[in-house]
Amino acid sequence: MPTYEGLLDEALARGLTVIEKYPFTSPRIRGLCCDDVIALSEKIDTEAERRVVLCEELTHAMHSAGDILDDPHMEQKARTRNFDRLVGIRGLIRAFLAGCRESWEFAEALNVPEAFLSELMANYRARYGTLTTVSTDQGVFALTFEPIFRVKRLVPTRCIPQQGKRKKEEAL
Image (cartoon, rainbow, N blue to C red; front, side, top):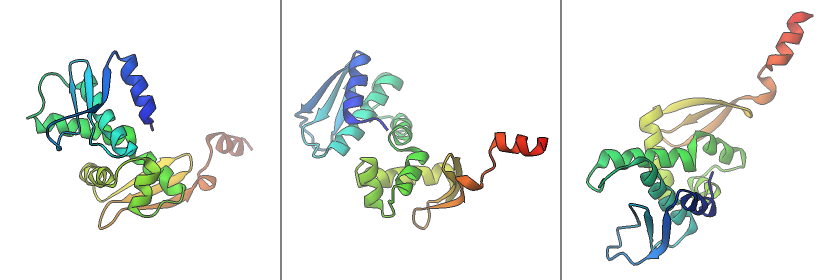
């Protein structure tokens, strides 16, 4: 998960200028990307929100072309990339393993606003359905998105056969 400072470094490496406290006239505008400049609203209160907005504007800079303000499809593609980059399914599992159970705990551990986490859950529910399973180095996990979000470890790591061990046992 990239930090806010890491995202600023990435913008600099890509030749982008970031204006961190731009006085937009509309309170609805949190950030904009135009040419090689990203502007973040002075009204952003938290580092978590600043991180999310900067990441989304970086995504626009890398993957969008032209004026996309009236293109909901391009906005949704950028949001989806942002969800995966800032959190991702594996990020949800890491937060669960760190002890998170409530939505505010996940948001805090993942350094994202609760509203962003809520949008992420709706996006993942649309993409993965109400249930998905993921195999990681820590085991196999089931993630349910309805009626409420839950993570459950199905198989711990120690129960997953290792490739090397299986071959040694077959040789015996």
